[in-house]
Image 1 (tube, one colour):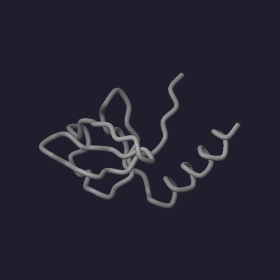
Image 2 (cartoon, one colour; image 1 turned 135 degrees about the vertical axis):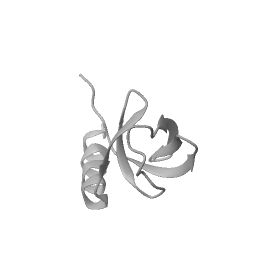
Image 3 (cartoon, one colour; image 1 turned 135 degrees about the horizontal axis):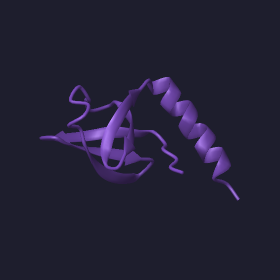
Image 4 (cartoon, rainbow, N blue to C red; image 1 turned 60 degrees about the vertical axis):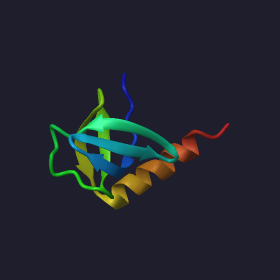
Length: 71
């Protein structure tokens, strides 16, 4: 089972986007979602941006994730 949390696009160069997951940055391809722009929140699977999600939904999901990640 995979569990995806939203990340924020902070940079785009060619067909690669840098995604910030609360301080951890990873790279993903935007070839499946060419309309992605800096500032968007996205869901990534297998290093491909699969979905752009609304900012409010992303922030709520991140809040819930942070709450469940505490010991």
